Length: 204
Image 1 (cartoon, rainbow, N blue to C red):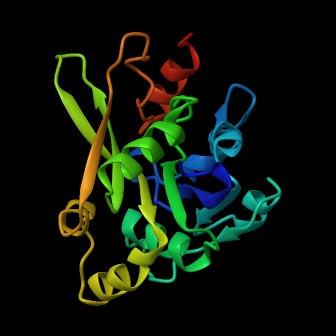
Image 2 (cartoon, rainbow, N blue to C red):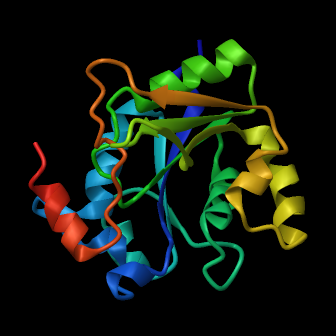
């Protein structure tokens, strides 16, 4: 069994927030606190350590009380740049990533990914969530990965790679569906616009 102290959690808050009008998405208010802080507090009990990946307003994120690291690759290179930052700064055997704009992800999220990773002897475990139309869609920014993948990801990004699926596709990946009875179908809903964020605040 993978102990939670062997896992570092990374909140991805390094994007441009383009669909939210360019605002820093992680600092938008959600139920009385910044969105990224809400996400961090949900992740913290599930892991040993927590870090934040952010590219602006670093002092605001630092006020949350955990280490904050900007991308090592410039120009908002996307989630893989965040993955790489996390792997480079992580001192544990595993890294788990969550985006800052999905604050209601499951409380047993990390445990279920860890169980699947170990069971399948995989390199990456990735969440998948049920859609309203009954399909199950992978959520690659919700991933648990082995720290030993860092050098491979360095090579991939240095070669110009930016797409998560192109990188994870090169590794043994187990997809973990969150579609059990009792699983909240909206747990992985991400707020891309302020209107979506306000709608998410009204959810139970």
